[in-house]
Image (tube, rainbow, N blue to C red; front, side, top):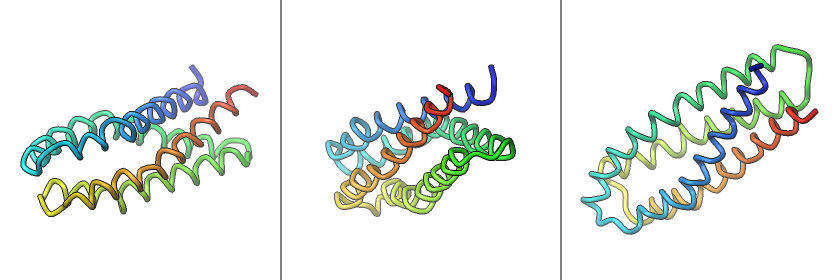
Length: 137
């Protein structure tokens, strides 16, 4: 298996995951009372982190390695999109999740989480399409 195939698998895993989170997981938060949400969120955040972090780390590592190879605008575009997702995740979404975990969030945080996550959903979809396009060449 070559590096592009590994990157394609990582990107595919993340695009499937983000669509599940966007369409099923985050909207389900609206159906919990606050105490149950805080309890469930602690479990959810740990478990999803066990899946997401290895995929995200693999994605950024393969993106950087491929960037060091032959010059390609698609590789540059790919790494910029990956950087956007990382920035958005750690500076926008982690604080919202912390509000839920700390019981300082409210219904507005959940609505914001769902609404703002569309950006990550679109970006991760574009990342996957970019890698798929490269793999078909």
